[in-house]
Image (cartoon, rainbow, N blue to C red; front, top):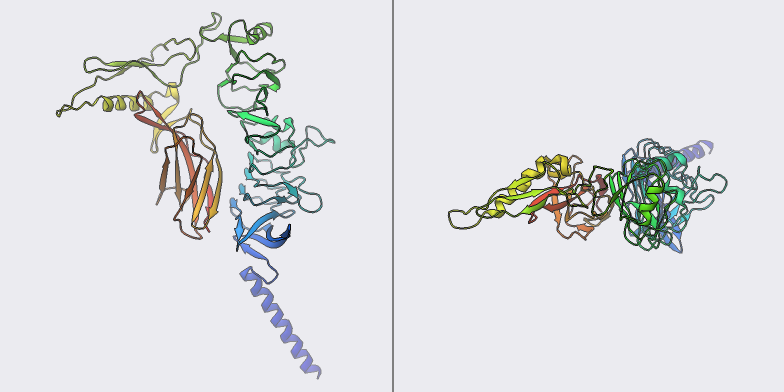
Length: 491
């Protein structure tokens, strides 16, 4: 009897172990757990609906895109410590379906550079989402959907050191911040970091707005903060701005000229530790302020005799169109006084007739412009590459989101003000050497594209760049550099 009992018990134990291990291998046990590329999910009821909770990441990819939906159920939450301590991951993109965030979810991700936080708007269980991004010293970019609404305010017990979700180290290393339209609790000191290059705010945010990467009040009348590592040499404040408040342009060492409209009537304390020049209207408030505070000044429409420099345009102006009998001329002009830059004049070849009597003037002009753009690096920063003429002055688009669908990808990017259109490339290899597909977007206002007829369950790499037409008739094309590459797996 005892021997039979032992045999029966052993067989039951063996059966249990086989069931356990085989269930773990296929990553889909009866309790609702599932493993997709190292992303461990469990079922979670949210507002009466069965959804997925991202419990943990066990993979070793540098770029991770979390799916929005699995088997018809949305991914709605990220658990406590889900990515904590991961030293490999560099980019995390959460879907817009994610609303709930756990405590220290990304704590200690030492190589994390970019994160998109979906529609996060509340914490999960105890501690909420506190210290979510602490000990992430290489974090450069943080963004979210326009539905997100979480707290990035200074902690009252450690003002200037903690902002609920990250600390001073993370704040000081950030280069890009996107604040969604619904974000309603973000203190201004979030934008005081030492490395910040560009700030962007969603439309109709209750606290802030932005213009060309600089932070303003929601009504646009007060300039609040320009990132200390802002990259452009010239910044033009929009007409209608009335106040430049501290810190304003403090420590902005890259900016050489700030164009100040007459509408500005207050800007005390906004130019600490700078060596820039104000471009103003003579006898305006900004002119008087500059003179009283010993700042360098230039005047709209004329050159101040104290300073010899001009603000040169980035592109050529055609001074004389070519004809069938005379060559044309183009040159670089000062943006304000119209003076021609010495030595910048370039001849445009005469228009000629083909043997059939058709004009080839446009062809000649196109060739001239293309040559001058590729050679004129001292004027517009352009250079000829294998991908075409690349213009350093044309900003790289920021690829905001790539969302996977059934045999399709939805691509969204940040609008570039100087662009005439965009190009999207996608391929199955990161190096974009083989089987590369290119889509050209000719509508400069468009910032979204759905790529269809893709292969199911395959990984794709996506990037985008801007282009602009130059020359008298837009006959030559220059391109920005490519955006950062995003990897996404199609459903």
